[in-house]
Structures are given as structure tokens and as C-alpha cells.
Length: 96
Image 1: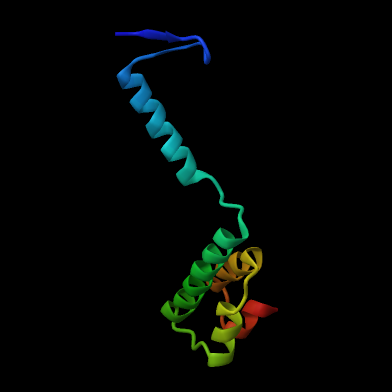
Image 2: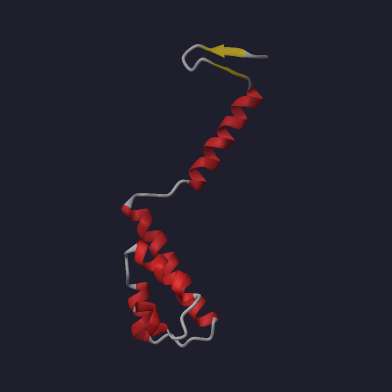
């Protein structure tokens, strides 16, 4: 049964309300997280991914290079490195 919600000026029913909740959940999954804490978590994951990509390509990652990559907290720089990790011929080229 439909009911009119005056405060939102929309018609809702249980099925429509469930669909709205699913859309809200999906929207949060696709929203970029902007808090420093979350950016740090994403940076950590992206740094690990960059090392994995380099190693999967057969490139030797030294402890110093690994420490520089995983020790970086700048998400934008790490994402840049991650993209370059797919193209470089040596890990040192990542930082050029």
C-alpha cells in the first residue's frame, strides 16, 4: 500500500524503500573516502599492490625500495607509482 510522505514529497512503499536503501549503500561503496585515516588505509593497500605488481613482473625490489614505497603516506604519489609499476623496466625508474 502506498503512503505519501509529506516531509519528502515522495510516494513510498516497502519495496521502494528497500530499493532506496540499496541505492544509498551502493553510493557509499563508490564514494571516495576523504578522511585522513581512510586515505592512509588506501595508501597502505596501494603501496602493497605496487610492490606486488613489480614483483609479479619479475623486478627485484630491494629492502630500501620496499621501505620507500610502503613507508609513503601520500595516496596520490603511491597511485602514481602503482600506475608506473606496470611500465618500468627497473624499480628505480619508479621514483624518477
